[in-house]
Image (cartoon, rainbow, N blue to C red):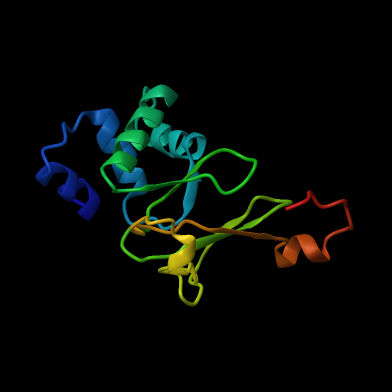
Length: 146
């Protein structure tokens, strides 16, 4: 049994076959999958799992802090299984490729006290946008504005 499935069981999460297969698809996978991609992988193991169940399960896992819901581009929300290491994201504005990045000073990103308006800073979420190497060397198209 994998670590994610075991953590969920320890937390008392009701482990239906559908929820289990979603957790198993995410298990040990570092990536940024869409709900549709999770659904396709889950259906390989459990053909009757519905897309609605996948969405509900991913949303529950995000609330529990087991995945990060990332809205990094114009495309669909992605689900990031890397919740243990602080990081930000870099997205290609053409092909929507998404990768983790670790900017210097990412805990505050240089936000001075005067700009915090009295807030206690709890988290930072930044999305860097650009063109990946493959899209830069591909036939020139008009890149969307970042």
